[in-house]
Structure formats: structure tokens, C-alpha cells
Image (cartoon, rainbow, N blue to C red; front, side, top):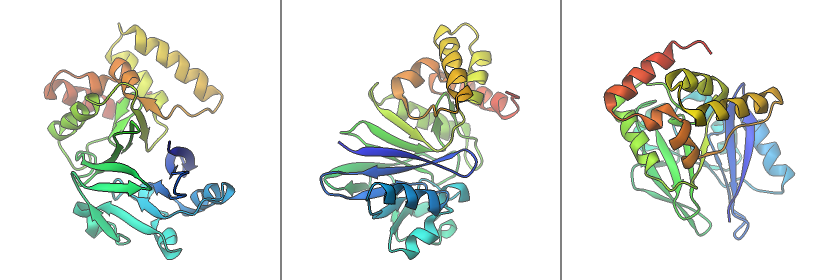
Length: 241
């Protein structure tokens, strides 16, 4: 089994340390800054071997340079190489990355950025979605189209219920409040909103989530068409939680 450690960075980002106890190998997904990630790894006696980057935004790549200087390999989307100057190894759709003997398939999931990727450990039922799929939400369409992001939602929705979703931000409370407006008759959303409000009142994290939970309570994953998805995304862009 892989060990996944949440590392809060910056204002509301999460970086993720992923460790294989069998081989001792460790990677970090989306280190927005290096210090907290290094400290979390050192506290566990882990050496960071590689950074896996989902997209070029600096709140996900801000720690790359310092980690690279320490001898860590930087893996990032080939399509965003020009915007990730620290890149050592470019990846794209269908590529396979290894953490010890555990394989992660690279998914190209454009929309938030054009070259955005996700990392899916199929056997372990773990997916790192960056800023595409959030708990009860999805990423803004800075560079892509509703059709592209809707296609991503379909891919995520097809994963097994138990799949653990590790995203890049603690946005769940705002997302849950929007979901309650978007689907006012959804009892599962009402219940989850209450749970999230209680968690955040205690400064507890709400991530990871699961595909099953998202199917039940995420309006973007539940959208029946590109048009419905686009309307939701437009509404969320101006929503005041």
C-alpha cells in the first residue's frame, strides 16, 4: 500500500507526499512551496525522489526549483514545458510513471490549463487531480472549454466508487454552498454541506474525497450534458459563498 501525506502549503493549497514503504521511494505532487514539503518528508525519514506536476500554475510549481536544486527529478506535462522551466521529464496521455512497483497512468485533462495532467494509480484506486476535479467542484476554465472539462468529468465519473481523489485546494466549503444552490433538492448535498461546515469550523481538512461521494454531491460530475456543465461553471464563477 502507498502512504499519502497531505502537506498544506500557501493559503489553501495541498501538496501530496506519496511514499512506497516497500522500495522507500517517495514523490511529491504539486509542491507550491518547498519548505513544508521538505519538512514533512524529513520528519518521516523519507527522501524525495521526484516531483510530479499536474500543471504550470505557480501555486503548484513554486517549490520545484528548490527541490530540483536538491537533486529531485521534476516530472511535468510535456505540453507545458515552456511554462515549467524546471522540467526534467515530460509526460502526457497514456504515459506510465512508477513509484516502486506501483504504476500511475498519466491522464491529459485540459480545461483549467491546456496541458493539465492527472496521475491515476489504477490498482491502488488513487487519483491526483490537481485543479480539475475538486471535492464538490471543478477548476475554472482559464485556458480550455466547457466541452474539454466535461469530458474530464466523464473520465473521473467512470472510475470505481472507492477511488480516492486527491485535489490541489481546500475549496470544499465554497463548493458545497454552491452545490446546495445548484441542486436544492439533493439530500446528499445538504448532509455533506453540514458535515463540511462542521469540519471547517474545526479547521479540519475535507480532502481526500471519493468518486462515490462526488457522484452523489458534485454538480459538475453529475451534469448530464456539456450545456448543463457550462451553465454550472458560469454560475459558479460569479457565486458568492
